[in-house]
Image 1 (cartoon, rainbow, N blue to C red):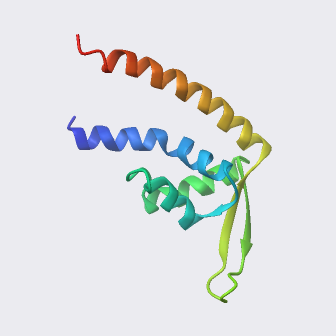
Image 2: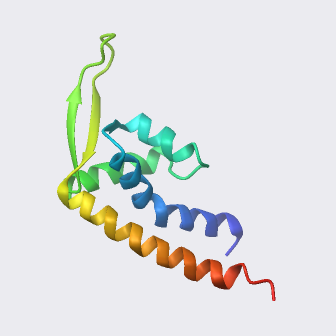
Image 3: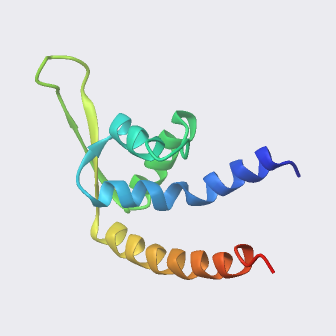
Length: 111
């Protein structure tokens, strides 16, 4: 496996946590989520974001509503965490912290 493939797999594994964490800060529409995720690096592609949002909504982790923009442009679909989504985010954060600590302990030890 080359490092590009490995990096892609890391991003895929973290995408759901990243999306839930961003939406957990407040209601956002798709492009805002994409920009938030990619503001810290290319974590989520547009091609993977919308199927992920649809799945999270279908699974009851996100709620969604359509809203027209004030300028009369295209309607935007806003996403928010449901109660189940908030519980999942809390659990994923706990698991992430443990995973991050375990990996860092092994990988960052230069001996």
